[in-house]
Amino acid sequence: MATVQVSEAEKVYILHGIRDDLRVDGRGCEDYRHMEIETDVVSNTDGSAKVSLGHTAVLVGIKAEIGKPRPMAPNEGYLEFFVDCSANATPEFEGRGGEELGKELSNTLYKVFNNKHSVDLKKLCISKGEHCWVLYVDVLLLQCDGNLYDAMSVAIKAALFSTKIPKVHISNDEEGGKEIELSDDPFDCMRLDVENVPCIVTLCKVGHRHVVDATLQEKACSVASLIISVTHKGTVTCVRKMGGGSLDPESIFEMTETGKRVGKALHVPLMKLLQQEESLGTRQKVGFLG
Amino acid sequence: MPVDTRRVRGPEVSQSPLLFACKPAAVFSSHGPRADGRQRDQVDVRPVFVRCGLVSQAKGSAYMEAGDTKLMCCVYGPRETERKDDTDMKCGRLTTDMRFAPFSCPERGSWIQGSQDKDFSLMLHESLQPALCLHKYPRSQIEVNVMVLENSGSVLAHAVTCASLALADAGIEMYDLVLGCAIRQDGASYVVDPTYAEENGNGSDSSDNQGRLTLAFLPSLNQVSGLQSDGEMTEESLSAGVRTCIEGCYKIYPVIQQALAKAVRRAAPPPSES
Image 1 (cartoon, rainbow over the protein chains, first blue to last red):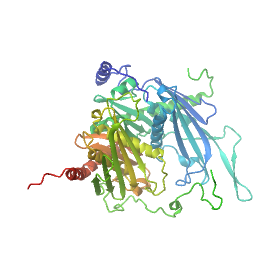
Image 2 (image 1 turned 90 degrees about the vertical axis):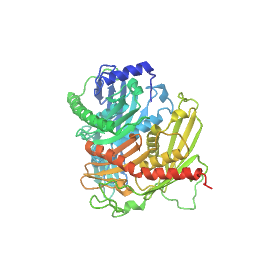
Image 3 (image 1 turned 30 degrees about the vertical axis):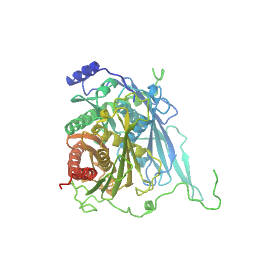
């Protein structure tokens, strides 16, 4: 993980600030940084989104391909996650350096989506036991400035929202074989219901308090953080303790409560924003990263 | 690569016959007592069997059995660190490796460490690290290897307990033992220390509030060193689950202490009064 060197004096400054609910960049303890979301950014994907949160930038592309359902769940499609830590983000990721972090992030994503309601997997089935849609969710980290989990989960939700899966028709030929026909009309497509897709909230324990959306400097002051993925209803789909320190039970209860509140509050403006962007239609694009 | 043309080789991918069974072998019912006679909604952990120092080559080792879950752990080190490029040499390094024997689960696994095993290794690392006095071992690394011989549920929780026991047996300085406990939330009720069937079963028809939670706990410091959950849970049942897991950890605490005391006594028998 990209790290910064923070001196003792800086640490004390950050710690004392957070104790008084005042962070270095002027936010309160439960505030996010400025977030920008853009969907449909890569034309070769079936759905894509770019999210920047402060100086953290994440690009998610979703490709739908036809595969064979898993034998354990013959009438469901599935999602595959892959996180790539680009060497652009920090030189540490060069070569195989980012592999470990990428594995960690993608394993967490599998956990986050390991429930029945996040994505309706039955909708991804084309014919039982034979064909299904496999959604390859590829996450690319472009810039690291703390709080990768939250940015990543918002980007995935936005990308899933914009995903358009072409409709397919199955016809039986004379010999009893099945044939898959893809619709010619590019507008004849299936959309996913992303209402229940959870967002991740990372809470960093700094001193005796916890902060949402920690920057790298704040992260350097904390020994342990808790990631909580929350749906719009407030259901928790994944919790995980990260970092080398331990937490006392009481602060875990406080943190899950804050996580639920912050996560629930994150979903409403996000969905509104995504629908608003959708209604704007195609727009003139000037530059991509700008 | 030479190809064996004389034999009909099996298909490249094979599946367990269990998938073709009409009914799943072990149905996890959501009512009534559990298959092994334990109670639901109670901190009813499986009786555990623990032994220290079974592997003579290792610095410390432990073997643990809970129901049918069997795992062993070996600790090597502290020894000189392999990676010289590490900037932080003031602290020791802890490396964890958790593997499943290919025959440990109902479906055959591969010998190569999959991404799930890596995830378990990482969780084990994060659960154990807060308990170790790593600053006492500068420029050295401590290796923890866990091998799961039989997976009958709650593997991670027991692996944490077993690994901390092996670390203690190896004489590594620690702040506290680390104990693990897992629960499976099933609607309004829960089962503590779930078996494999309970862990992976579908549970009751209403698919709400179905989740799994594993917790690692430092009993004498009252600190949670590891926490992970998946599935769906309300915040209330999550908090209740954390409390239940802590209670479960206290239940196995005396057994672990006893096993450790026994190992120490065997290593250095008290002077006989003659």
